[in-house]
Length: 105
Image (cartoon, rainbow, N blue to C red; front, side):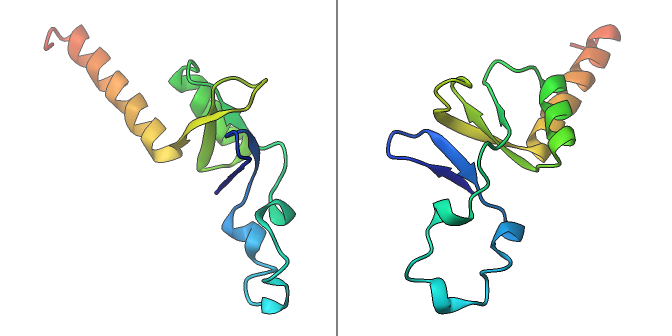
């Protein structure tokens, strides 16, 4: 889950493991906010990043979902990517390259 402010600026992320200590403790439900459990300075990708670098980034930070931001200065969220989607896109590029090499396109 991505935590953003009213202008769409990424402030942090929350994973299921981040919530584990609060999952069954309802005593803080009225006072606990997303910003209280969010991990600050999450990894991000920019829209122009090539697939190979996106895969390397996701592997380096061990995240399945990464926010895509307009740029790393404004941190305005424009979307997100899932590791499986990135791998599918990468495999499609490889398959297309092989088909082109064989003259099948």
